[in-house]
Image 1 (tube, rainbow, N blue to C red):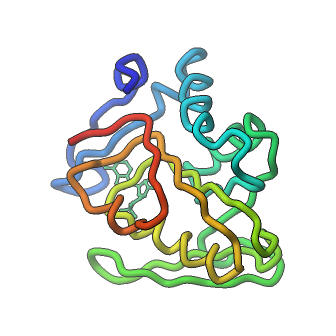
Image 2: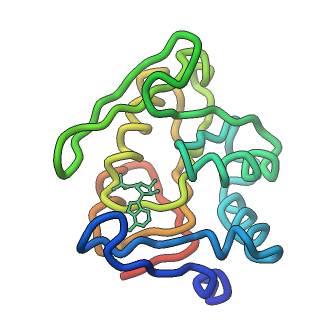
Length: 172
Ligand code: AMP
């Protein structure tokens, strides 16, 4: 794991609510060496292995587009409800309190297309698991999920299983 990249991530205790330690990636985004190093570390294992990158709103978009460019493929979007203008498929998933919903355009991924999911951080895995379900409903082949950060003390990796998880920085 890159100690350099880890040094560019800042812990903000009790944000957005008491008890949560928020991993603030803005110093990394601000760093002219940190940003490209993070993007290439997220892309590397998937070189030549995918047809589409799937970026998850909203910090997944920051990394999804440059990872897609690095891999020489296009970008598909998973968004919060009501943002995508054409025909969509929806997936509702459980949060600690209540539920949340994600959407994808029904034509975002061709049947059998090899997809890598990209997001900034894997925590409980609820968001990623909902995106995995959307890809499978569209007939896509999810070959992996790439995160800048994995909170290894939470069950995210198991939730996304059997999709292989790649993370650049892990906290145990
Ligand atoms: P989850 O569905 O629990 O895996 O949460 C994933 C999403 O929530 C990611 O897209 C992150 O942007 C955000 N998130 C969850 N926990 C944190 C945290 N401790 N610090 C920063 N972002 C977080």
